[in-house]
Length: 243
Image 1 (tube, rainbow, N blue to C red):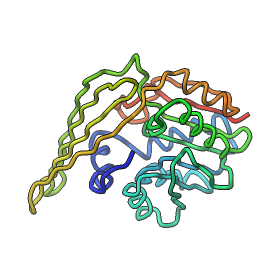
Image 2: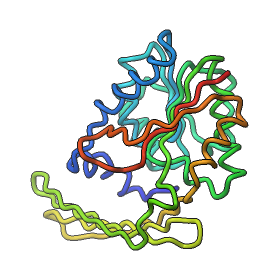
Image 3: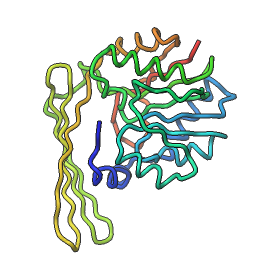
């Protein structure tokens, strides 16, 4: 999932205006992780995006780091958190040479894997980066039975002298969601627009479970956990514990 530079710079602003509370999400994830591993002191955020969660995680853990593929997102995270390591790379090739107590992968990012074999590779790499007893928390995309083909959404926000609209349309193409995201930005200098095309795989629930089990983790599904006020962005969370 490679975001346009303008998309990355607007990402936090748009989602916060829709009611997303990154700090509250990070606190809820920390509570969930420590309910399984009370002694957790270090955390890796895979697909950390703009670093919005890490901004809170760094106050809740002794040591944190991020890992992000999209250059534009990574640039925002590095500017926001110059004292936090933000590693570049594809989650299928996660090789940091060390382990953490907790690993999180939010924003449905793991569903960008194109097939179950790649999902297995990504989850295995995540599990290998937590200590025995460590916790891996993954936010999936919608399961096939729950996905609404042709779903459209829109949002308009105003900030000072700028107006931003974000319109999305999601369609099913085989086992993949093809999401078109269109932005229009208006300010004193004029009106511009740009579009990102994102592809997210519609994995079955058992695909995720099997990936965790093959990676040497026990796994549970926490359904319907709303990490942001009223924002039904996914069916829940998979919580794995490394054996």
